[in-house]
Length: 218
Image (cartoon, rainbow, N blue to C red; front, side):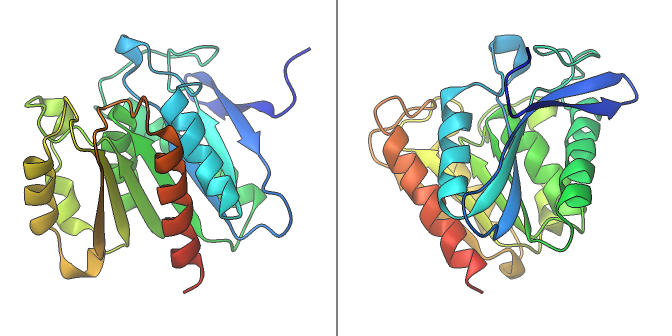
């Protein structure tokens, strides 16, 4: 039997594997949480993704984690964030907003998932809040062009390790400085943490939960 909470979302390439976790008590919002690079072992079971989803659940959000195309039991092929993964994220938003209409929507992504999630969330009018975790701002590849954030007008949390190997704090602050004031960017640097927050996962969870709780009060 397939594990409880695991679902499949229909997609043009077949299906997207996902895990839906209902919030306990009153549902204050819904969140889509996206995983790191598929070609380097990234899945919806990644420990950072799991802990981020836990933090959002603590804030009263129902969370949906997906496996991008070509990962796990999701069909399709990896596109390097050249449209395919963005389509997967949009289909996941369709599922969430269809099942939970009229609730605030948040997208959080880790690493490659931040690249995809920030783009989709910036452009999709249904998304109200954005979180980028370990945003790979120092990776000089086409996949990691963040110029689309010039269009962002939504509250954005950038949570980052002090020693992140794929995004220096200086580069992250430089990116944030170029965003519109309406984005209300908040940067949270976790001392001593690398890209995977190995010894700081609980601080990551608490930081995400606290930020989400504050946003949902407004």
